[in-house]
Length: 218
Image (cartoon, rainbow, N blue to C red; front, side):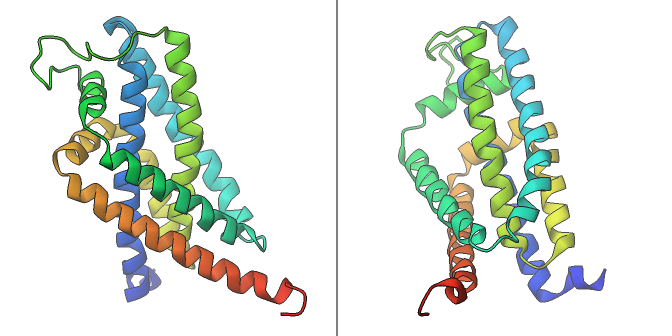
């Protein structure tokens, strides 16, 4: 248990908390945006399904990913995937906030932009379309979250377990609150982006060292 409080483990823990916070908020906004185009009576059902699916997928991916990252080459590949996640997050942060506002309104059922309508500017869609969009996004973002947490926790299994439990808890309990927090305080998302970029670089570096002995002539 004392290993949990070592300087290295505490650094990894802070990274994991920031990753979980940012990616849970990002996932929640995507879910809210997909559900925003639905009628009010269907919107809440779609959001609940999306949040439950995200939590379940994180548990499933955690069980597989921590084992898969032990295979030579997959740590390197995971780092490259996280680089793509960073690029995607950067693009989203640079876009205007109109879509995010619609997502927040759908999640909170409140008129954030005071236009008299909750998520009234979002394109209309069917429940099936919204559910499909949410499931696809959940699969991608849950894998991103688990990879980032596993990469940050490195050789600290206690930190890894804490990070995965926190990730599931944030999606299940506080997704709406976090999405609101990230919209109001954009700097938190940028700090999270830097942390994920660092973890991606570290995974690529450590993965390259693992691959080097297997490269002919190296």
